[in-house]
Each structure stands twice: as C-alpha cells, then as structure tokens.
Amino acid sequence: MAGGERAEVFSGFMVNAWVVATMVAVVGGAIGFFIVMRSSAFVAHAIPNGSFAGAAGATLVGANPLLGLAVFSLAGALGISLLGRRARHDVATALTLVFMLGLGSLFLSFRVEDAEAVYSLLFGEVLGIGSNQVWPTLALSLASLLALALLWRPLLLDSVLPGSARGSSRVRLELAFLVIVALATTMTVPVVGTALIFSLMVGPAAAARAFTVRPHVALALSVALAVVIVWIAIAWSYNTNWPIGFFVGALSASAFLIGRAWSVASRRLGGARHRAPAGELSP
Amino acid sequence: MATLLHAIVEPGFFSSAPVRLAAEMGALVAIVAAVVGVFTVVRGQAFSGEALGDIGATGGASAYLAGISSVWGFVGISVLAAAAMELIGVQRARGRDIATGVVLGAGFGLAALLIYLGTLQTSTSGSTVTILFGSPFTLSPSDLPLVLGFGALVLVTLAALYRPLLLASISPELAAARGLPVRLIGVAYLMALAVAVALSAVTIGAILSTALLVGPAATALALTNRPGRALALAAMIGVAATWLGLLLAYDSYYWPPRHHGWPPSFFIVALVLIGYLAVAARRGGGRRGAR
Image (cartoon, rainbow over all chains, first blue to last red; front, side, top):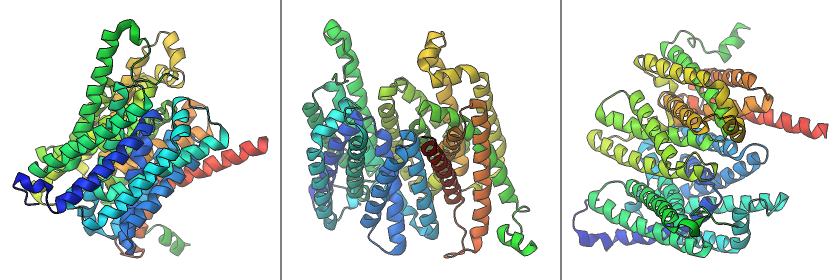
C-alpha cells in the first residue's frame, strides 16, 4: 500500500474494498440492532473471535479458511446454545470462547510462522481485498439479511418482551439468531477482522437506539451509521496507512457517546414529556 | 512402575527452572483469578472480565512502545478501561454489556494501532500472538514480585469487602435496603477484577485469563452453594488445571506432529472445560434422577 494520491482511493483494488466493506457495514448494522436489543454483545464478541481458530485450523490442513471459519462459528453458536441451557448465559459464552481460542493456539503452535496472518484476521486487511472475495461476501450477506427479515417479527417481540416466546420455541429462536451471527462472522472476518465487525455490531446500533425508540427507524439509522463509519475509516486508513480497525473502533465509540449525550440532553430538556428513560423501547 | 512414572512425568519436569517459575506464577494467578471469578460468575460479569483482559493487550503494546514493564501497561490500561465502563453505564444490568462492548471495541481499535506502530519500529508482529496466547513457559523471573504484589492487593481488597460484596452480588436490592453503598462496592469489585484479569493476561495470556476466571468458579458454584467452600474449591480447581496443563504441555514435547511442544494454554483450557462439563453433566443427571 504505497498510498499517495487521493484520487487512487476510488481506483483499482480499492473498489473491492469499498464494495465489500459497505456490505459488511450493512449486515453489521442490521444484526447489531438485535444485538443491542437483546443485550448479547458478548456473543457478538465471542463468535467472531473464537471462529478465527477455524481459519488457523483450515490453513493447517490446507483447506479454504472460509470453510474453517464457517465450521467454527457455527460450532460456537451451537456450543453457546447448548451450554447456555444449563448455565448462566455469559458463563456458557465465555467457556465456549476460551475453548475455541485454546484450539486456535494449538493450531497456531503447529505453524509458528503465521503471526502476520493472525494480525490480519484480528484487525482486518480491508485494503487487500481481492475481487474473488466480492461474490462470496455478497451471497453470505444477502443470506443473513434474508434470515433477519424472515425472523424480524418473532425476534423483535422476543427482544422487547423477553419471555413472550417460551420453552423450545425460545431456544430455537435464540439458536437461529446465533446462526445468523455465525453466518455474518464467516463472511466478515476474513475481510475486516474480528475486532472490526464487533465494533460495527455494537457502536452504531447502540447510538441509533439512543436517538429513536421506533424499531424500523432505529434499524435504518444503525445501518446508515455503520456504513458512514466504514467509509470514513477506509478513507482515513488509506490516507494515513494506520489500521482501519482503529478508526472503526474510535468512530463507533464516538457515535455511542454522542447518542448517550443526546439521550441525556433530551431527557433534561424534555422534562415531563420524557418520563420513560430515553433509548429504551417501552413495550 | 518407574518406567510408567517416567512416561507420565518426563524426567526433568521438576528440576527445570522455567517450569518451576511457570508452576509458581501459574498457581498464584490461578488462585487470584478463581477467587475473583466466583464473584464474577455470581454477578454475571464474565463479559467484563473477558473484555478487560483483551483490552489489557493495548497496555501491553503501549508498554512495549514506551519501554516499561508490560505488567504496568496491562494493569494500568485495564484499570482505565474499567473506569470508562463504570462511567458510561456498566452499573445498570440492562446497559452493561453494551457499555462493555463499546469500551472493548475502542480498546481493540487502539490495540490495532499500537501494534501497528510497534511493527513499524521493530518489523515483527509476533507480539500479537504472545499477547493473546501467552505462554507460562516464557515468564521472566523479574515479574514475579510485581505479580505477587498486585495479586496480594486484589486478595486483600476482596477479603476486606467480603461480606458486603457477597450480599451486593447475590441481591443488590437487599444490600441497598440495608444501606450498603452498592455502587461503590461494584466499583471496588470492578477494579479488583481489572487488576486480576490484567495480571493473568500478562503472565499467561488473555485466553487463559478468562478461562481461569470463569471455568473454575462456575465448576465450584455448580458443586456447592456455600460461598466460602466455593471460593476454596475454585482456587483448588484452578491450581490443579494449571499444574496438570503444564505437565501435559511438558510431556507433549515428544508428541507429533512437530516435536515442538503443544501450548500449555490449550491443555489448561481443555482441562477447565472438561471439569466443568463433568460437573454440569453429573448435576444435570442427579437433578433428573431426583424428579
């Protein structure tokens, strides 16, 4: 990346970066809406982070890293769901995550020369995206958006009123949601890294929820914020050569802080009108 | 018999200096993590623990850039992150995981930048692997007093706060009704968690710090309801998993495929998980039988 002139930011291999990162942002912002509604940020951290062990394992046996990511992220979703039936949810998530990472450390120990690859899986190599990555990413992002659209009503109801779905249907719904996170993980980790997709799933959605209580508006705002954040981050990353993960993390956190400030200010100014805590969907 | 013993315990395991240091430091960190972990599991703050350990990596990278001991970097940044989480709303259970997530996202971003700046200076990125996965076999003896001091600080804090912290963790409403400063207790606990997690992240890696924080504590709490007994059990399980993991890692030097030794973190994590699953399955079977 011997980056120099600004005009090049839209040319050649950079087009792939823009296209793929925009898709990642759309999916991240949409899933993030539910992550925030369901308070499952730990899962959004655990599945992408743990699944990178799958990429390490796949390169070890000479398979496609995407396959390893898919297998591990789905196994992580299943593991969290299975363990979570008996234990507290955060304990189940933590144990699944550390086990996957433990396997990852084992795989890496067999191939010590992969330090560079680890760094890019964690923090992303968005500027090095090839054109062969565009189609798989597009297919997977459409699949996860479609799944979200199909589950929109039950997921929303279950997130606003936990306990409205009972027993096995609740377990199935939770598992379906985890599988969507796993799908999104598979497509995004090789492109933008585990750290970045996590920031995109949490920051914009949390900010959007502070601005509006209407689900459709919050979802749209979350997606829009995620896309804008990614675009700014790519441009700055290209110009400074600093890692894109840094800009996405900082911008997501800033968006969240602005949202918090907004909800505090509107609560103060609105006085009696806003008796209900701002940013919480009242059933 | 002697040959069997030799097959299990490779000759030299007890006389090797790095192994002895790893066993001492690993046990120390395992005890501190397990004791803090019991409160973490009861309070449902496993995500905070995981996040603080990961953010510690940022401190590790900045200490590396500044040229100071990485223990200070890890502990400092982890305490700062805990303060940030507290400020933006970790105290309310509803917004807690989002606040944790936002701080973790920003911390990860900063880590990416610092590691990148570090690679500009030294043109290696091996530190990523070391920070995340760490190895007890690569500890430096000069860190021992610092780890010992911080570990003692955490244990003393928890001992001083024991009864109010326990009540505030099990039933915040009851504690508030009794006039206990629940929020202040929460802050003190979060700081203790930050130091404990940072200590174990710097000595044995971020993965193991979460594993030793949550695994032994959850196993102990599945075995007993009595807090004192759970603390003792968790500490014992943590130390046992650490030592057995070190032993297996030492043995694995002669295993395929590389003859390079399997990482201790893998064995310790696997042992912790197996212990937890065994206890959970036994308890589940017992409950079903009683019905």
